[in-house]
Length: 107
Image (cartoon, rainbow, N blue to C red; front, side, top):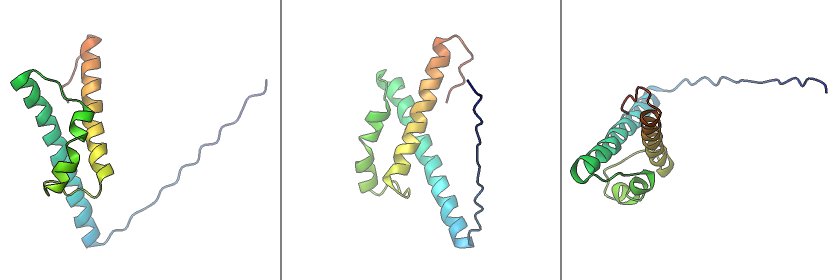
């Protein structure tokens, strides 16, 4: 059987944002960081207070209410879901390392 040649192409797209666009992107990043930390804190508090674990679905079900209340101004609903998926991924990796006896490193 002949060897197959795999060619990977990469493209770099440069952004040259205006000052207003830079400010808007920085604002979105800051809001995503705030939301990540809030989701992380919610999980900590839920376990510390009631020894209940919260997962992605529990937090995602609250998104509509949070956005309707005006407490979250991320660009769109998908951005919010992505932040919650990242929190969930971090916790799953943490508990996986704990289970395997590795140095856990809390999210």
